[in-house]
Each structure stands twice: as structure tokens, then as C-alpha cells.
Length: 182
Image (cartoon, rainbow, N blue to C red; front, side, top):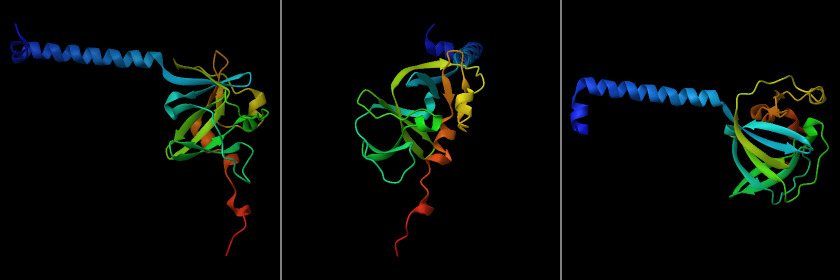
């Protein structure tokens, strides 16, 4: 029996459709069981995690063009294939000591809609599927008013919300303080 004979038979065609639906459902269930992909990285001795879907790419640190009169977490601008992207060091926002960038560090290009930024991290550790059960945010971080820290998983990775991070008011440059020119 060839393929044309199989498809011309309505009973056989219905059996093939049912099998295709069953296989498609099994793939969706397997993906749901694995969980969402998370990118894990380190800042100092701490391990952090972001949804991989929010991370557009990972780059080696090269150089930053500094900006005047910006918050401590804003390091400056980087050039990503002709696009200028703001580079952030979130350590001060988390109550950690800032560090000088060096060539062994990485930049995570993170986006939320039209907002895009490069996060300076010490090391990218892994990208792996997780269905995290989060414990409450550590008090050392919660005391700094960081609403975009979601909690800690079983491996002691601190999970971050990229949307909340990119919209943190402490990253905004206050244009009201700048002199106006006639």
C-alpha cells in the first residue's frame, strides 16, 4: 500500500489525524513538564537567574562609554552592532559593592518590549529548564526595596524579574535636574 492509497481511505486518514494530535499533545506536555528556560549567572559569590526568553544575547565585555550625571547603577553605553545600549551594574541596587568591569565579565542583553539594557555579570553559569518553587526573598535584599527580586529556588539562585528591573525608578535619569538651554 502506498501513501496515496492510505490517504484516500477516510478511515485510515482519521487514524493518522488522531495519531498526529496525540503526538502533538505529548510534545506540549513534555515541554510543560520540563519548565521554562532560565539563564543563571553570578555576581560575586551570589547566583542569580533570569528567564532566558528575556535575554536576547550574551556578549563578552569589551568597553563602556561613560555617561555624566547618571545613577550609580548606570555604567554607560555599549555598542552592539551599531545600536547604543545602556549598560547596568545592578550590584548597587542589590546592596552589593560595585566592581570595576574587566575583560573576564559578560554582558547580558535583556529586553522588555522596547526597553533594552546590558547587564554586567561576572560569569554566565548555565541555561537550563526549571519549574522553580521560590522561597521568600532574602531579607538582605528585601531591605533594599528591590521589588524585582522574586525569591530563591532550591539551588539558592536568586530569581529576578527583568520587567521590574528595567522599570526600576532608580535607573531613571532625572531630566528635571538638568539645566535648560534657551
